[in-house]
Image 1 (cartoon, rainbow, N blue to C red):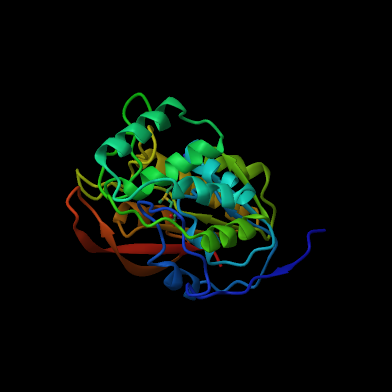
Image 2: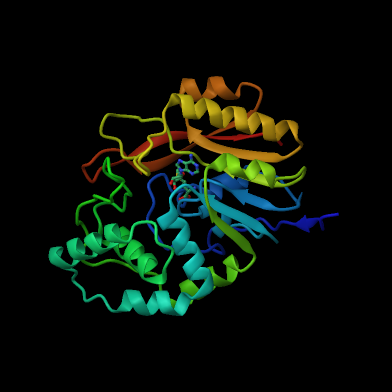
Length: 282
Ligand SMILES: C[S@@+](CC[C@H](N)C(=O)[O-])C[C@H]1O[C@@H](n2cnc3c(N)ncnc32)[C@H](O)[C@@H]1O
């Protein structure tokens, strides 16, 4: 029998800062999310739309399963878990202010080694994330990263921050895959946090430009179906999504809490307040 684990709710001051910028990241909202969740006894934690991992970074779970469809992203978590010092050293070799030339040369290298599960590729990923325009992750039709240069003075995590993240990841299993692949692993009384790419809010919205496959309405319906299946199996589920009628209609039998967050919605450096939902079954 799985050991019952007490989950301490933590404030974001106590939580760890993500090491990347991530579109749709929950860093600004995480306090609000935790405030609205009342769970004490769960067995294990699953976060299959990992991104910047704000929920995991602010929780206190005995064992976690962290996954994402982006293999370059999950590789970073694995490399930081295994070798935070080498990641820090790799990032320290970049001279600031970063020039356009350096940015595009690292981008080429990154694309040449696309998907490789190496320390060097993790360093390139973090470097590009921190120096690119808005920190978005977008690929072209061939699956190659194509975000332009944007930030000559990047703020990388300190060695202490990377060590702390590494320690936290020691109790996590990290893998690359579709979110529904966790269905063979989850058991009653586990907790799942689902934070899928949101529906497009405007033609220029960057929210769902994560992977080659865009996340359309059909995908949103599949996530809702998946969440309902998990719920019927006695699993605790929390979902984040945009406050849109099409989303509310998918979760009529769930507890829905409204909240709001500031987000970039266009290619301009413009942030607006958008309404989001916390959807849960407990
Ligand atoms: C909204 S972001 C998650 C943000 C994260 N909660 C945070 O705080 O930064 C959505 C993530 O889902 C991933 N993703 C997209 N389609 C997926 C799929 N079918 N299965 C698993 N992950 C997917 C993207 O790569 C992206 O990292």
